[in-house]
Image 1: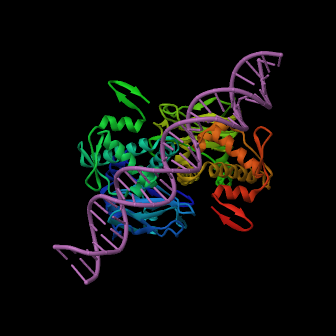
Image 2: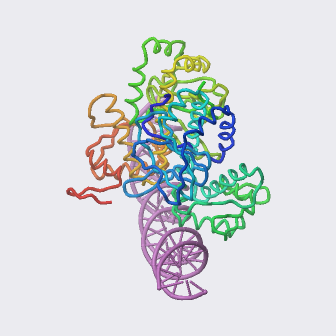
Image 3: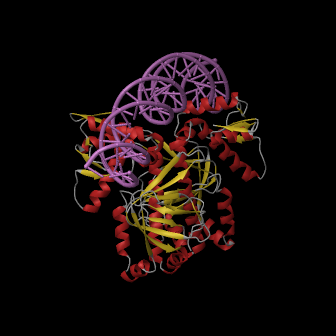
Length: 250
Length: 250
DNA sequence: CGGGACGTTGACGCCCGTCAAGACATGTGG
DNA sequence: CCACATGTCTTGACGGGCGTCAACGTCCCG
């Protein structure tokens, strides 16, 4: 065991790291991959299902096969912070340590299929196979820098910047997966989830999208899908800049 | 080498983890401790000195011996987010990887004495001594959960809650170190640093402290030091609650 | 003693949270 | 197939918390 953290942690696949993780997964020897995929059992969940609850003892590790999962923390009065969304190949409950509790709650945002491992089995694999250990440690390091970037965003960026950054991240993630430029982004989560991810309210998310729509930057209409009409202006919105004939304003 | 993260990271000693880290340090075999302390060179810095700059190639690892260091990220327009403060035994530039750049800027908040290692020397120690590796990995895990807690704070807590949480964390850290209850906290950093740590402005920090002072919860006056007159009310302020004869209100 | 950095306090305004009503989609039972 | 309930998104009205700008006070160090 390499780690003695006090809480289990989630390995989320952020937009900018999705390719890194998948290449790292594929770099594993196929025999190791087989051992990894061995002895997992698959579960299927409907949207809204709880997966793990903050404070519960961390007996299992999960991997997302399909669907979207949200990871969040709660304040006693119900205020919620979604610390990340998990997509395919995202892991929940990785701690490198056996006697821990989950440090967050995880919930299915859409219908999901998950692989489940009993923790001891995967822990043994960590001990025996340095490559697997390295895989998860690298992910954890990525996760930490992503968390620091998100602090800057939550503390300092305006609602418009946050929503634009989110749309661009989702778009980049999907473009990476499909390997091509796209003109519309799937947004499977509810506005309330996005709001809790961005530190806003659902109303503000909605209003901000309406503003971007009225400015001709995006297109709304089909549920769960947002068209992107003007990438450079969306990028400007994310940067907090406005562009008019070559000049940049703030 | 265990990690292939894209950026160097800081191991800060947060209030709740200071004792954990120090006990972990002391748990190291003394011969290993000697090797760790070996071949480090000490540097002395005045307040405001830059230590590392985001984007520079990460050639050195630093340990804080005395003083306070701030770790921050910048937005192009100058908006700043202090992601953490480092005190004694805090590390800067740990990556478990050789060809990296620093992912943040570090600066001396007060006069500081730092130990400096050339990165290869410490990297070798990581490879050779699992206990050292485990030490840093555990710290990284703590760091990640601390980052997630701070997200919740930055996104959801009011100015008063943030300032109260900060004061309590500083007080707990100092009480831990001195091993006794205290009635005043040293606050060596400028309000501007605190503001950038809490996602506020210096004016709001000042105003919030004035409110707590007027409510008789804290005492101000001596520069760099804040007296704490009523711990339970300060705790209530941190929780976002108000207590009146046993009843809790929000 | 004088200058500069830092903290305090006030005035003002805006962004975004809150509350509320309405539109729209989806599912369920009759 | 329709009536209705339920959950979600949209839009408006309003207010408050905190950012911004500015003036002043205070401390420190030359």
